[in-house]
Length: 89
Image (cartoon, rainbow, N blue to C red; front, side, top):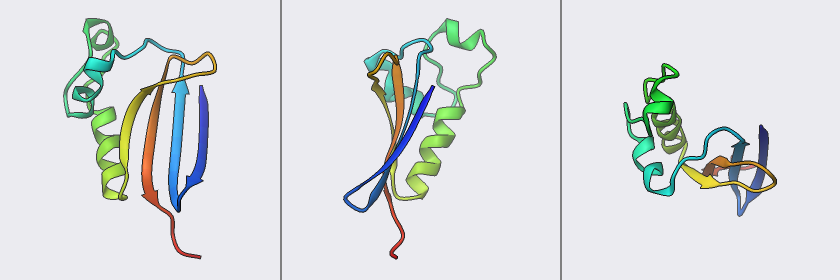
C-alpha cells in the first residue's frame, strides 16, 4: 500500500494505492453508494458495501470528493480524495 498527500492549488489531494483486486471502471461510481459491492468475490469477504460510501460522504462534507482510479508504480487501484480546501495560514 502507498499513501501520498500533496497540495494542489490550495486544496489537499490524498492518494491511497494498493495491489488488491482491481475495480472495473464501469463499477467505480456505483461503489461509492451505500450497500453496493462490486462482485461476489468481494462480498465473500464479509463487506457490507459501506466503507467507500462513508469515505465519499466524509470527503464531500469536507468540500472534496472521493474517486477510484487506476494506479501506477506497480499498484492496481487508487482511492483519491480531491479538492479539500486547506485552511488559511
